[in-house]
Image 1 (tube, rainbow, N blue to C red):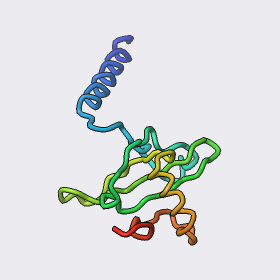
Image 2 (image 1 turned 180 degrees about the vertical axis):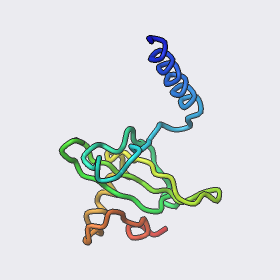
Image 3 (image 1 turned 180 degrees about the horizontal axis):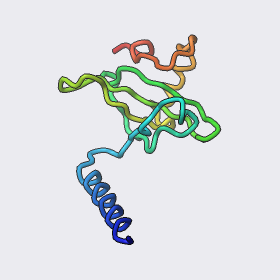
Amino acid sequence: MAFLPRALLLLLLAEVCIQLSGAEEPDVTLFESTSNKGIDRCWCLNSLNRYVPKEEIEEFSIFPRRSNCDKVEIILTLKPVNNSPEGIQRCLSPETKQGINLQTCWKNKNINNSPTLKMSSCFQI
């Protein structure tokens, strides 16, 4: 009976090692579900601390601090590449210069309280 938990732990450890060995940048994965069920949870596990070229960003969302998440979260939707049907989402640190600029744009341009904002509405691309 004790074999099963150990086997699962080893599988999990192997998966983490595989993920880390192939990672070019930090894991900035969102929680699996962004449905209303988990809206108060933090969605960004980790955030990028580097500049993302504006040309690569389709749109972005900013989520303020919430009851179960004590940090501001910026989620970028990158433009699709290599014939993929949709863009990849990445989290950006709100403390970076780019994060601060996006927050300023969000406050100035998002007058309709839209859940996302196109990059083109903030910057000429």
